[in-house]
Amino acid sequence: MTSLNPQTTPRHQLRAEKAQKNKEAALAAFLAKKAEIDERLARLQALSDDHFETHPDEISWGDVGTLGHYAELLKRITDSALNEGEFAE
Image (cartoon, rainbow, N blue to C red):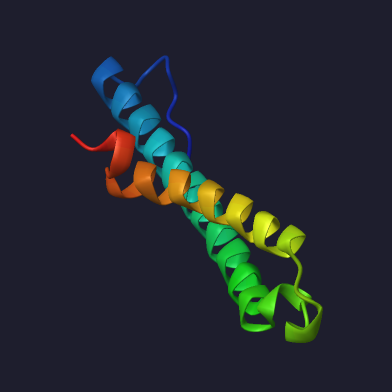
């Protein structure tokens, strides 16, 4: 897309071009953040599949506490994203 000449282009057309560029930039930023979340979720799923790198014979209450902390953080995220818990409407 070529840039419009502000001297010869009507203002409404300049505003429309600016709005379109802004919309495209927002979409690109959104997709980048979504990709970041998807990548983190995949890494977290892989860690969970590996039992958080903990052997069943070596599990302690510290491990339970760590998983409890992770679960609470994830609950805050899911409650916010899904409008549940304290974020329920």
